[in-house]
Length: 334
Ligand SMILES: NC(=O)c1ccc[n+]([C@@H]2O[C@H](COP(=O)([O-])OP(=O)(O)OC[C@H]3O[C@@H](n4cnc5c(N)ncnc54)[C@H](OP(=O)(O)O)[C@@H]3O)[C@@H](O)[C@H]2O)c1
Image (cartoon, helix red, strand yellow):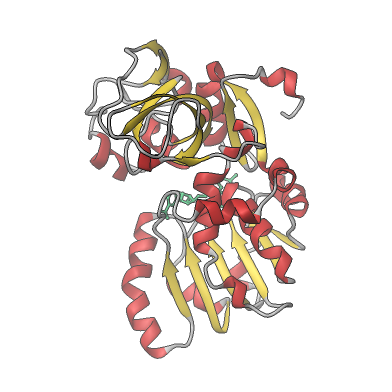
């Protein structure tokens, strides 16, 4: 089978190479999946570049510990073999999921995963549509826990709204009559409007914690300030939720949270993703049509290194999809 592997950290276009590797055999309770679509995520880029260095603690300090490290954590595909003891899936079933708690390696034509690592994929969806949901969709879904209780007219801000999580955050919260503000680069302002944000800010020009505006809920994909700055931008009973950002700032937030919540009615929360948890509920809330603007690509399998570099240069909008079936030039969706 074909797979992208790397043996040293660096620019994906230089270190990520396509190789022929042995086809895996499913162990007990595992399924062999023919991957039809995958996505590029922050973890993949960090794993390949070895930055932030925290990633090297997990994958190897000077070079990856495994001889052939494989990135890729999201998949949509078809089960082509079921190991002994599989009870949920059989050959021919279409599956989707975020497999990151089990292993990486979806930048390949096939992968073996425990059958508990994937979920059934709706029949009417294409692989390219289904694959954008498990990671960013679930992060937004889990990050927005509590938003359903907000009254119409409440203000919600998403920092880093031009990416996958930002797209799903708008999709999942705009129905409730909530006023949405998205923060991201200048280049992504029009795209954020299209995704459903009524107000947009360019983070290079405006610091949303210093405008004097107060929000009932802040969802942050890129925490890069101290907690007190976020408190300033919250309403009296407001909630700040982060799904990611600079490790030092996230640690400060966790430490500060205990003290802040003792003396304030404002809430701070750090979401640790539970992969695929309640994916069925997310699927019931979105439609194929509603997620279409989130798909960037699809790119071809061979384009993974250049697509990853494009991701690293932060030029992407929404989710960068890789399709094993289509030639990106034939979809007209690029
Ligand atoms: N909590 C968990 O368990 C968990 C699990 C996996 C991943 N994560 C994290 O969750 C986040 C996922 O977001 P995603 O999938 O939507 O990523 P994404 O597609 O890369 O989107 C992030 C967006 O934030 C923008 N951005 C970068 N720096 C910013 C800043 N200082 N202020 C405002 N916006 C900024 C980026 O734009 P530009 O770079 O173009 O400026 C990009 O549009 C990542 O931080 C990831 O590390 C969390």
